[in-house]
Image (cartoon, rainbow, N blue to C red; front, side):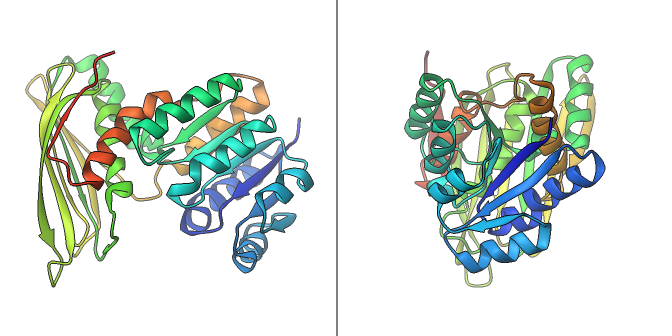
Length: 296
């Protein structure tokens, strides 16, 4: 079965991650056609079409869905619009690989999940760290090494002066949940300033996971270097794994497409499984100080 794939969004994520991953899958495994790329900026869509060999470029989601004759969609638009474009795809029956974050608030994420379930849609959220081979191997080691005692994330960037860095910081939050195999039970956060003119906000968290492990993170968007490390102690041993910004993208793309070709369930995480990551992202975005896990 040959799948016709549509890529929605022609920004950084499309150019650096999803476009290269789709092109690599087609080259290595075949079985897909890069049928359409869509962006509100027609020139950007055309650039991505040429760069990765898509058949058509569109500047309208509706036109791409009607004219592309798609079998699946990769949605990587701007964060405020991820959910709306994903739902447009789900409503016409397309399975979706949805770039993080799936929504901007916990309430929106839960609403998105309910709508997807009502429509019997299939959506896999693209938290690429969950597919980085080093982090996958670390989680495997942790699963047999005994109860996790401490976890720490250190995420630093060179010159990210984003008004809201929380949509990148969510990577560290979600990866800590992935490695622990548990949700945050509690989290307290303080905020600092960074950059040559103290123009950016840093995030420093300390808390506890549901399994009892102590957890901490330091996230500094203007630290003068790129770094993303995860450190875990268990049974008197320390494990460290590093993440490159695009690490894991190909693996998650391949898992998504392989599942479709086998008519198998999509790989996780589902939107429901990412709700707590979105809730903590929301806390960081509004500079909240304390998080406590919702009772269900």
